[in-house]
Amino acid sequence: MSKHTPGPWVKCDRGDYGDFDGNSVVILGDNSCVRVAVVHHNGSDEHDANANLFFAAPKLLAELKKARGLLVQQTRSKDIHDGRFTEIDAIIAEAEGKSR
Image (cartoon, rainbow, N blue to C red; front, side, top):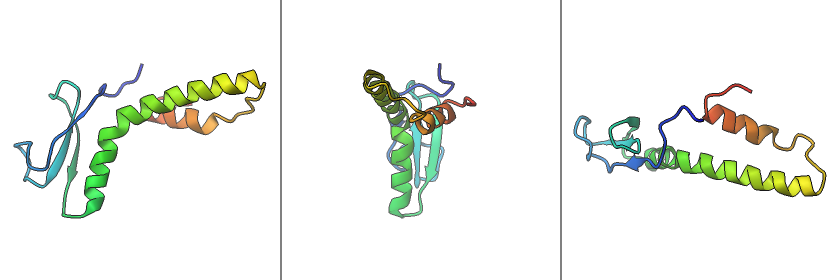
């Protein structure tokens, strides 16, 4: 079980979240009460891209886990599993706050 706030998350438009200066994108947890991330914006596209990455994080993690499962099934049928998932497993563990 992951320790992070479950998705789907909500990405507010800049200025939609009252306690910031109008230049921040706030990412909220699934119940819209938990502030997951605040990306302060100074007008560059990079800040919007960062907010989009935060917003997509729960979906990215879920899809990575699904893809890993499919890859494991395929490699088992071919009898090859020689540590190919080390990096994927490390990324999943890091995202879930677990040590490997």
